Length: 371
Ligand SMILES: [Mg+2]
Image (cartoon, rainbow, N blue to C red; front, side, top):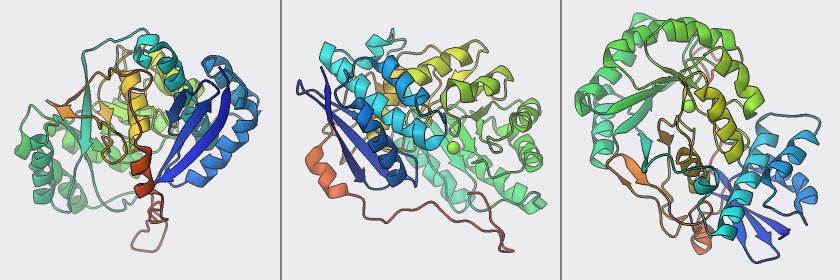
């Protein structure tokens, strides 16, 4: 079997889909994307095309090694996301060629169903509480929220009170059986994160995510040692080499590699194995499309230390059969490969129209803020 052609679809809201064609008629799908950098990643995929055309897509590890190491300049979001999407498409083809879901090829399944979480929030505590209740009504048992707006290096008591009021209202609304995760989105200073997290402990969040940025492992370790709340991080880390120090220093209890950024399905399997040796869990990051989600679900089904899968789209309008959530879980996919059928006619209704870009956030004094 040989790869004959790579086809890219840039679709709303901010996703890039890859369709890999072969000389045997089998096709594979992947999602090579960095949020806000679709065209850059598309170019990176095109730069890999010369290597891939004519190759057997079932030699996945070998092609990962070639795509990663022959660049000389390794790592980073662009190269790793391009490789991730290509790698997902190769797994899709490999599974289809054998008539098996990818998780069967990874030694699974390790579970009977896969827990997923949904995002919710609001401008006020009352709105956030209503949004949380609505998600529970939709069938979710795990939620994730965050705090809107820019955060300065230090903030006054009223800011901390607003954070606490939001989480208190959400906990009150959904009770103690529902998990609530809190994403600080890498926009807090370590000092303010520690102060806020301490106040959030009584509400027993599932985890606090990215309490600070991913550029200094020692700061994350300091935060993690300051609290009883599990710390989660990893959406902005790439490959096993990028995760190694964070896992070894136990900077988090839960790691969140992104199947479309970290290097693909098999790379995240290796990261999960590293994390397992420190008794850490894996909750894959996925604010992306349904192909990336499908790749995540295959991985989740195959690893022992899975926690919960992020999703923002179950595939309505993109997949012939979108995923369905009941009792907080998605059923194990049964189809071969990634277990999905992309609805190409429907994709034509979702072609990217330039309407989305990354937020550009500033503080009240005009200085640049993280978002
Ligand atoms: Mg996040």
